[in-house]
Amino acid sequence: MKTTLITLLFASASLGAAWAQAPGTAKTVTIHHVKKGQEPQKVMSALEKDFPGSIVQDMSAIPGSLYGQEWSVTEAKPTGNQDNLQYYQVNASSKGMKYTAVYDQDGNLISSRRVLKDTPLPIEAMKNVATQFPDWKVIGNKEKFTIHKDHDKVAYKVEIQKGQEIKKVFLDENGRITRVVKNNRIRI
Image 1 (cartoon, one colour):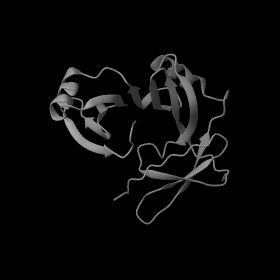
Image 2: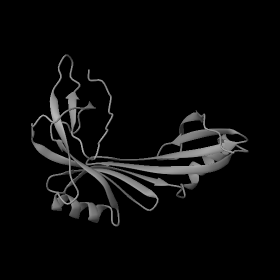
Image 3: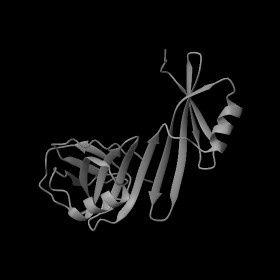
Image 4: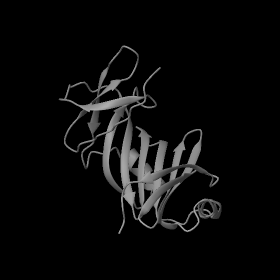
């Protein structure tokens, strides 16, 4: 069974090498940072259509063999191996929202993740938090959309505070509480 470890560190001026996590095997492939001005036009046009007004933070070209696989990234010296670059991971943002999207070389959206900060959450979600945590104050929230070709997922995170104690409450798309994490950060 493959292990799950996804740690993506994309440095703007360096290349990364990824090792596939198959039992007893390791494969080195190259992940290329796409320089400003060298972004594929089809991907940039699709990004503007899918996420209007967003600002690209960075873009990386990833081999098709890595998409959908469980893998980890370790920075290494450039190998010169160009692999078959088929997908582009784009990190972008706009006011109050951050995006991560994967496009194919023709600009088709393969998957995306959108995170909205401090946006009104559904009534059912807020009602469940208020019922489960009376006397707690909501101090922040995020709404996360994950979209894939065959399914979509929505989840919520609400930060609450009572005195000096802070908790993060995670909810599913129906507003049901799925887990609660105590936050060690103290707000004054």
